[in-house]
Length: 336
Image (cartoon, rainbow, N blue to C red; front, side):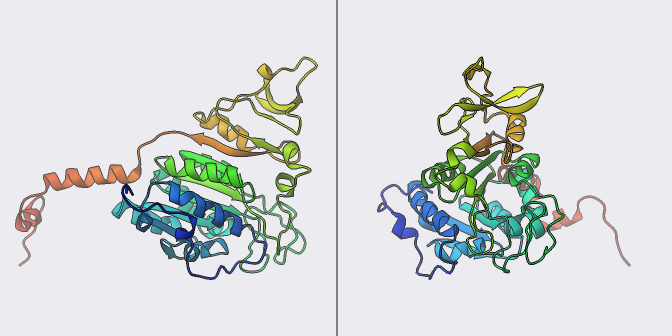
């Protein structure tokens, strides 16, 4: 996959000739732009990138990146990406999906690709709504959400994509925001560098059907006090004045203000190597807590495709040298 000796690529090399057909102002534009900036830096030949999507607004993504790609079946992108990665492990395979595509019809496929730990990068665009089908509630819509399909308010308890990924034992779990360009680029680089299944939730605005769903973490006036930026080995401190933090008391997290007997030593320290801590942090969120963004966990576990390749190699080594011997070994019957 090395590109040594080849002409240096830039963002424009990953821009396709297709007209981008998202609604003006959609957060997908920002995500596309940041990924197109990151791809040339990864040291992968352009023909070795593959983007696989399902159905939904986000799933138009493969048309807009000048690489190979599949616009596949609703919810089934992880299954198709699995088959591709198993047969062509040298490829850099990215799954682009949405909160509806991944967590509704595709929920079963998502949890199994995460537990199997194939070396894939999964980007879940979460706007808490069905945008392509014009504004129905999704598996991440908040309880009480009034939409075209829930005029009296949704009764469903929403999924937390980060907690779900951690529950499926994903080895890399992260969250970023569509308009946080530098942060999103850093997370995408780390997801690619991770060996195993990388799951990245990207909070994304649908300005037509769910405008302002994440306003507290995107608006300049509120985001410092509403966002907890995770950094490995550093205390969970946030706020415009960096004077608030998360403390653990009696196994329960609480927001505290530094000073008056509370010091930085009392604040919980983030550790990406601790999935149990990652799950606790994943459960933080409004209105009581800030929204965590960054890498929740990054741990190592053998990749599925490596284990499968080893099994195939071992089976081939034991296979009889001719077909007749293969058919004739073990229990046989003579039919007269």
